[in-house]
Length: 248
Image (cartoon, rainbow, N blue to C red; front, side):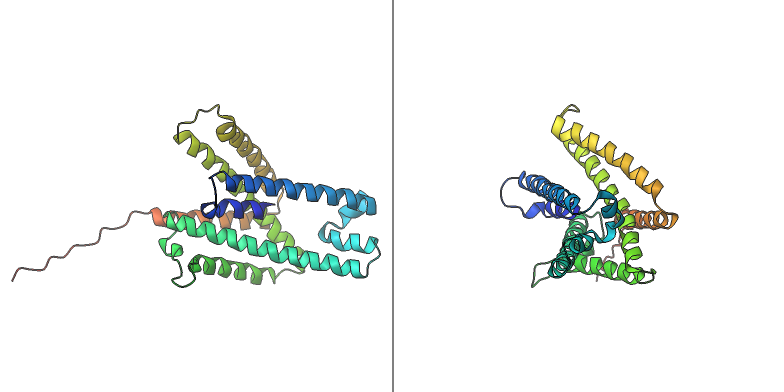
């Protein structure tokens, strides 16, 4: 859900049609995904009881396949998980690369990350930066005792960054439309984003407090690195000295 929403928003400058299309695309994708999740939850509840499903939260599809008899059903479930994981990784890299490119173009991040490949027309440096980061995180997760614990660490730490993204997006929406002259009472442009921002902030604080000390440290280090990285382009630049050619 979140990856689809991010791609819809990050790639909004390439949409065809009105400026409302990216937002509508995100909402339609969200509703379709929620509908699929609700249908699956109802179907799974017919296969096993809630307690058993909850105890297999990390491998729900495999557990459901076994309850259905295993065999080819397990193979289908495994393929589904692999395809879903690959799609999630791709959309995450696409969204983050596009976001870094946009921020670098607007001088929020170092301008070098806004470079476009002369042959392929892609933001190759921002894509490279994202993939280097992904590779580093992947290598670090190899230090975990098991793949399941590595996955949990990544999910727990990234959930804080994701929540912070939604908070900043809500605040940016409010500031943007207020600067355009829309009143504070505007329901869709100010009021609802404000309510969403407050709600997500409360959830984010609760989520951070409930994380392990290690996950909190990872989140704080990541946030600090992001603040420093974004602040560097805003530092005052020393004026370049001007030299004059002496007259003959």
